[in-house]
Length: 558
Image 1: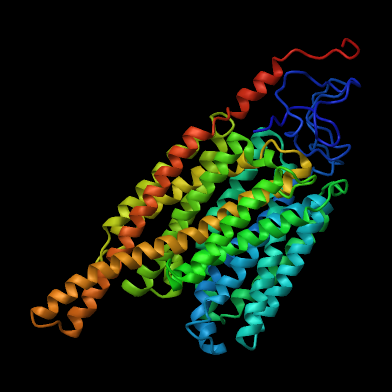
Image 2: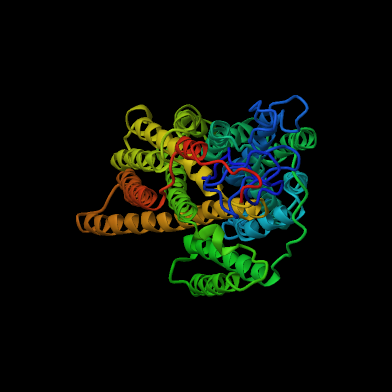
């Protein structure tokens, strides 16, 4: 992670100027790892008066209200995360009202994920080029307009188009929000607190979406699952104009058009391929063609980024060991998490008979543990311990929670069998998300902050697509294998009554869930091992001490 106390030039690209501003040598700063330092705001170095005051603490400093700015960023992030699950609750009602078929209803989800996952890198780079605050506001306004369009949809095509527009503006909004957070909070302790809040929202927002979707669908209409974004966006836009501050974009850079076509095309093919695999099967010619095409496009994209004059994703961004390890850890973690939401939601509603509202309430304790783990434990410890000592144990704890859920059956109760595992999972995710996001977005030049944030978001989106399709395939295959033999044996023995057949099908379905959840637990164990091996960054306090004991550079001595 970058040293927040390391002074830098106004563009954040390296050591301070030799003008008596207190730059030190040996601080470990690299030319590509400075914090984003708005002109005139200072960098955490002491000024000539020796007062030692940090920037951003004065009432006249533009960042004096940065904690209110965090609330604006968090509001926008919550809106994006909510949308990933809230529409799932609304889908059955929307299908009945708009006449969606079983074949095309998936496009309510697919249209969003294709646009979001495919355009994230482009959205992050645009934020770097034109300014993060500007793209943040544009993303909010566009997302709200698309949500209003979807809420007012009179037919399937209108709803699909609105969802695609939502995904497009989310691809601009999400990396802008994360990069604004990264460049606003540079002090080690404050950064940990800010990322704790952001990570709690990123991890718990999906569960909140299930609850809010249940409330809105049950008491208002499915349309309010989309309309709800409008008042949130209005508040966020108002706050953004008043509270967020960011430097102008880096106009000296140019947009890498071949990189956009190769990278975004490869990601769209990848996300679409995994989405289709869930319904069409892995051996489908369409799925195989999409996945092979994705591999080919992304391979050429990686080659081109090493030769492009202004690459869309500069290789040094992901070549860093700690950042690359964090991005891979995030991808694996989301695979396991998305699988659990899918199966547990189905188990509670279809097996235990919960209503959508009650299902949402059942996820609240897990959400509370994510918030506690992020804001009360990880945020307090991150400054003092190496990030991997939070990631590894957190992922193992989450894997343990998933493992306990492999013992559920159709007669399991929520309090005795579901709650303990989800509490463990929530606490583990809370310990994990904060250090992963913090390390993944630290130590990059300001001109690359947007695309770095987009890389983290892309890892989440691709991981979610893989988790949903891969684990669903495991569950379906396991259920089919379980039922085939038992139904054949029952037929030879004289057949089953309707009640016995229903009970057997439920048992087989839950068996498929538990097998898939077991694989999800193994994936989280693999993520823990990966994090412990690849992420070797020191604790921020240790790096600050190293910088403080480094010899000072005397102006004119060189």
